[in-house]
Length: 197
Ligand SMILES: C[S@@+](CC[C@H](N)C(=O)[O-])C[C@H]1O[C@@H](n2cnc3c(N)ncnc32)[C@H](O)[C@@H]1O
Image (cartoon, rainbow, N blue to C red; front, side, top):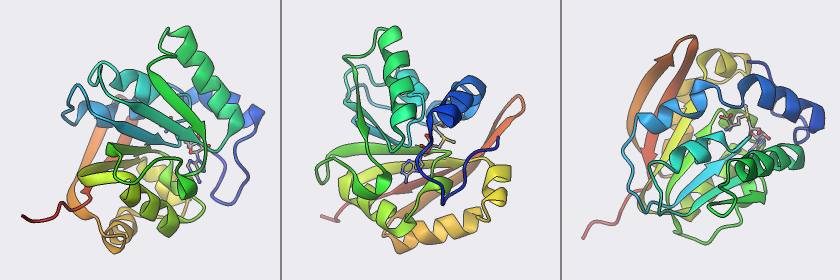
């Protein structure tokens, strides 16, 4: 997978359509979801939600939950909204045009946050992780997945990401490697600590 690098502007129309046609439903959009357990009423935020594919997949696991996607690219968001409408799910998924660095959500409002193949695009990782931490409920989880070769091309590695998660206050729970056909990704599971009673 090739894609714009960290310092580029939000994805334009051409890039968004290229991504949607090549990778919109790539197994990396659903493998991390299938690797975890979900509650029917779970509230889930997908950061850099792309075509919205992960959230539509998640609806089967969280039919009564609040599902929210954020995207800084208006072109990508238009594709997400259109595909979700075409699937008859427009009433079930909220989309907002926003980067991770300024999340349009209340403090401690989400049970889980997804960041699938988006972390390597974030402009300000410390700010972004601070926002993820803010919107997660205590004990809430972050599922962060990246494809190894994309990470390497972006000059990042899993160890560095885990260090940044620790620095942002998260507890690291697991690191798993997932595969389906030629699709590979590493899934980091981290939690916002819950207060001890
Ligand atoms: C490789 S795509 C992944 C899309 C989707 N999560 C998936 O798995 O197919 C990366 C996405 O991250 C988004 N992105 C770029 N910068 C971002 C930022 N600062 N905050 C949140 N998302 C960002 C891009 O617009 C793009 O849709």
